[in-house]
Image (cartoon, rainbow, N blue to C red; front, top):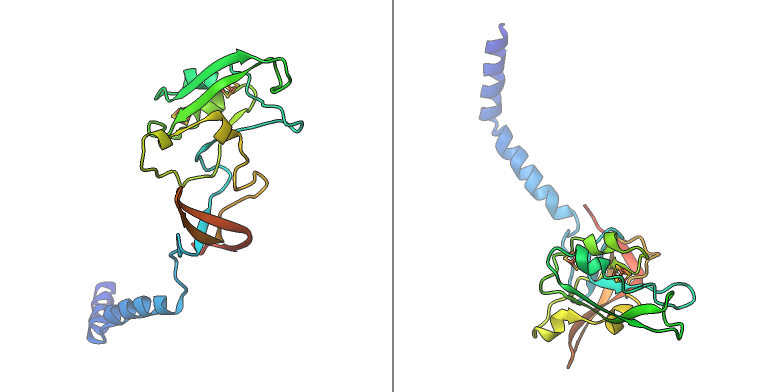
Length: 191
Ligand code: SF4
Ligand code: SF4
């Protein structure tokens, strides 16, 4: 039997026993026995991104607690959307690693596109894009984050690799809503 006839015969048999239809049903039903791929966010689960994630800015301190920012304004110059404001001041009280520190350091998140140019430009690794991504706000004022807020420790520590789903608590208060992750209780996400 020629190859062409063989292919025709196989095709005929396949069609006669609805092979493709049964295969399709099998694939659909096999998903019924797998766990859900979706997250129960924000009620009880929260995605913890990998370190490479670019979220809310954080301003770093060194191990002695001194601010690394020397208010050189390079981040602000490198920013393509002009959303960082740095106003320097002289301060020899030991607040920063140098006498020149930032009197004002703020970022307008409503214009930021999280490109990471600011952290690339920073000569002292003072600014870094962290893993905070819940940045929705109801007022324009809340869209701007100040130096004091950015100096606070980020909820996800640098040491945590990320790429996991953490148990979380959904908290509603006068300040808005918050999803607090329990970083000790994490699971791998099914891909
Ligand atoms: S991430 Fe990009 S857009 Fe946002 S502040 Fe930094 S440089 Fe500007
Ligand atoms: S964050 Fe870095 S680049 Fe920006 S002003 Fe401070 S030291 Fe300079």
